[in-house]
Picture 1 (cartoon, helix red, strand yellow):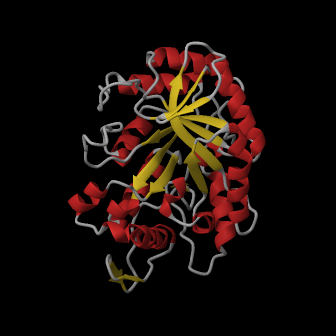
Picture 2: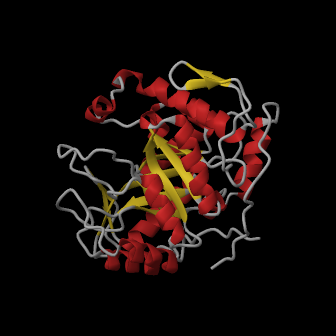
Length: 344
């Protein structure tokens, strides 16, 4: 595998007057996780955790989960994505990877060396911004710059009630937490004020700092926001998997939203039902899509030609052992869509 550079343990934070676009560009050009997954005219493959197939039931066993993650990295899977499901609600029938995502991300980083690890995504309205800032910077630093944070607004009304948060305020609450996160993570001893989350006259820092100046933020399904806001404020977007004939329009809508025409990747995510027949054609269903491994590679090539940069597959509904799924990806998909080189 490619040898990664050591990332700095400390950096100088930007001032409020530093040019925002150049700061972002510099950070993304150095961030290991971002560079492993995203580049212009390139497509990479990711997997949504848990790395376990369970078409029936609601909760994975998580048996040998760290060994399977190490195996996924060894065969060349470039990225992993974690879900954020604070409370298990049987009516939704999903517990995700069971473990809290930022905690689990730190554990995954400790047993891997190259693979990018992201969230798809953190339900930001549930997070307290000061502690969230410290958690994200800590994980990004401990992983040596392999952390990417996908953010979502969440859609489970029952969870908002459990947190004592008004569901109708979720969109504005996400924007306010995000605003404070950027101030706290990227400015030196900032002054700030918020009607909900306190205030500071300045002079206080949250440490550690993001190792490369900024941890990449990805809007999961737009994070419930206007696409123009996501394109301006975040480093990329992840959308639900779509039919082949809709790929070009999806990418075009995203690119039109980017204010300065800079490179901000667009990704897709979906439930994968990997069929035994490698040439089984792409077919959508209610839970995601069915496809064979060689047909998956052909679909990903179409997506790359349309401008999609990354495809995150959730293996849950595949009715075959995870070992077989990984072997098919290794043989028929990864040779065409390898991890990108981070370099020196």
